[in-house]
Image (tube, rainbow, N blue to C red; front, side, top):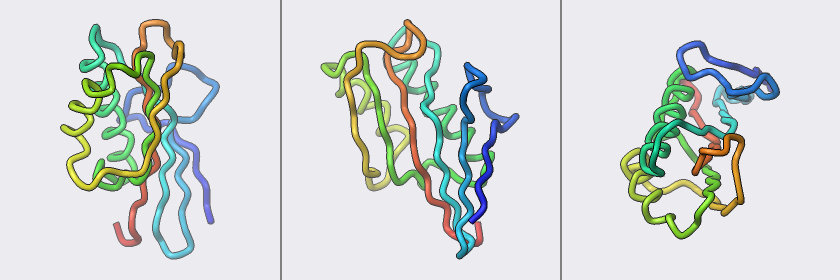
Length: 129
């Protein structure tokens, strides 16, 4: 098993030097697991921030030969859980297949005070891709 920590140049850069954006874990069978750190995005509304987060996630996955269809687990942190349906509507624009496993949490605040949503994911890329 080989583990590579990465900040792909083709994706938005991390907001802090204290974490890696992607942990790429190469499996013995040639498959790859991608663990993405929590992503936040700018925007005035929850919908704008959610779109920005999924666009950043898509860019990070693409940099490693994967896509949103490879997402197998998602963890979402919302500062207002009563807005789950608003978040969910945007999420369904990006995750169009069978929904991945996941959890959603309400938190009092995130890394940036203006952030309303943070999302971290795990993706599984089959061997040969």
